[in-house]
Amino acid sequence: MWSVWLSVISGLLIVFSTHWLYRWRNPKCNGKLPPGSMGFPLIGETLSFMVSNKSIDTPLFVKKRMEKYGPVFRTSLVGRPVVVSSDPEFNYQVFQQEGKLVERWYMDSFSKLLHGLDASGINAHKNIHKYLRNMILGTFGTEALKEKLLPKLEDAINEKLQCWSKLSSLEVKKGTSAMIFDFTAAQLFSYEPNKSGENIGESFDNFLEGLMAFPINIPGTAYHKCLQNQKAAVKIITNTLEERKRNPEIRKGDFLDQILADMKTESFLTEKFIIYMMFGLILASFETISATLTLAIKLITDNPKVLQELTEEHEAILNNREDAESGLTWKEYKYSMTFTHNVINESLRLASVAPGILRRTLQDIQVNGYTIPKGWTLMVVPSALQLNPRTYEDPLAFNPWRWQDISANVTAKNFIPFGAGMTSCAGADFSKVLMAVFFHALVTKYRCTAIKGGEVIRSPALGFGNGFHIQVEAKHDG
Image (cartoon, rainbow, N blue to C red; front, side, top):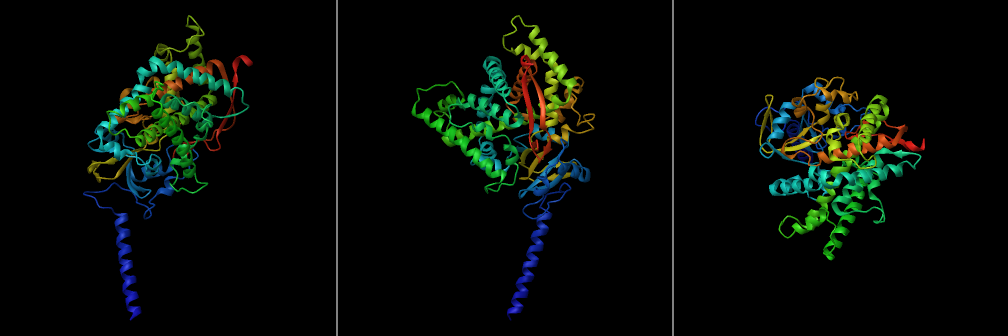
């Protein structure tokens, strides 16, 4: 009798498992799904996606599937159905209809770091996104850069370079991460690392790589380190917020002051929202800029011709000044750095720091005869566009001169280092100005020598293996 029941139960389990496996591999769709594979149940193709590639090229995970399935394919990452797109026309169409076809979406690991302050909450209240964008532009946008940030940036960068010139070796990613973290945090809540008791900016050098790791909170894992660093940053922001609330007469004139004033009129501005929103802004700024700047320094160091033309352009700026000791002006940045802007664009193109720009579909979307179901994640891969040999000749070569002839029509759909559409990065100008100011100070006052490291990897975020170590030496010392 028992053997009969065991046979029935085992048979039912086999039927159930087979059906479940079939449904996993063949998700429901009101049409024809894009080609691809959903991988193993639950984990999908996550492990393959996270494999490191010792190359600056598009991650092998994406490249192999593009070759097999075409520019749009389906997969599953960390338990979520995903459609990956490297089709510039489709991507452009989607970004132009944000809010109708798609909405912002973040990885679960990123949402956990922000304690629920994720895209879904912001998407549900459209005025929140508008408010945040206006606040960010007010602090880091073009007008703020012209009126007050440019000289502050130059002073901060000069101070860092002077400190670095006293070191026998500098790990560039670590150094630039700390520099950008400190500067951004200073504008947001007047952070002063020398007075805080610990310089947490130095611990954020490989944060994005940890964020892209499997979200397992076990000591020793990259994700665990991310959480520890997040807690340290959140603690400092929380302490600063509490101090300001206890002492309302303290006015620093920073981002936090304005936010606290707006708490009286904006109901969504809770203390938790403010703390994790500010942490999110710091994270968004320092990681991508520092990775791109590190790559740029390596590429310039490896290319004497680029370094020579860059140096000549910035020395010409000094020679054309009435007062050689005066600081950079907005006019010099806009009109006297033609080659510098080309170097920045080329560095941004090659860096393609973000492994993907994520959106969630709000309705079924048709593309190339296929249907992307409502509720799926859409991942647009910047490197697949920006390193495409059909768009950029010899795409892996560092060639700033290519930007002399690239038309706006090409860049509109094939150059998206700051995203695209209505919700493109509000800090784009800040990122480019910071890099330009850094190059100006570096090539006019210092020389760099590569010491060791510099291996470029994608895991799938841009990284530098065992680091990139240089020596920074003041020119007048030689």
